Image (cartoon, rainbow, N blue to C red; front, top):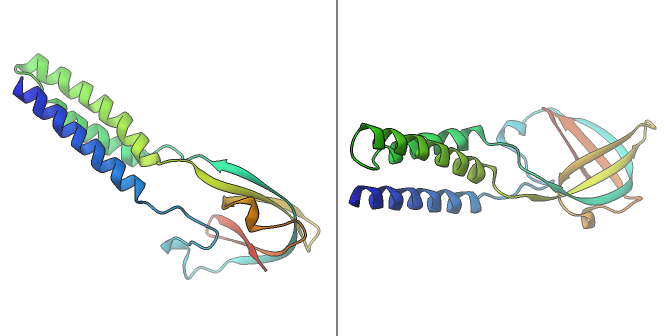
Length: 157
C-alpha cells in the first residue's frame, strides 16, 4: 500500500513540475526570433494590409513530451504493487498515463494569433498567420513580409 501511495505522490509531483515549466514558457510574438532564425538572410517584400482578423493558434503534438511522460510514467508505475503482474500492469498504466500527460504538457496552451492578408507591390496576394492580435495591424498599413528559413512574418514597414 505504501508503494502505491509513493508512486501516486511521485506521479503527482512530476505532473505539477511539468505544468509549472510549461506555464513559464514565453509566447512568441512578431518581434520574437528563435536562435536558428538569427543571422539568416530573409527575403523582404513590401506591401499593404488588406484585412486583419484574430485567430487562435493551436499547438501541435509534442513527441518529446509524450515520450518523456511515457518513460517516466512507466518507471514510476512499475513500482506499484508487489509481484511481476502488478509491476507490469503498473508500468503499462503509468506509461499510457504519462504519455498522455506529457503530450498535453508539451503542447502547452493555445496562442492568440492574427491572420494578416496582404497585397504585395508585385500584385500578388498572401495571408500570414502569426502570434499577435488584430490591434497589431490595420487595413492600409504599409508592411514588410519577411520570409526565410521556413518562416514568414509580417512587420510594420
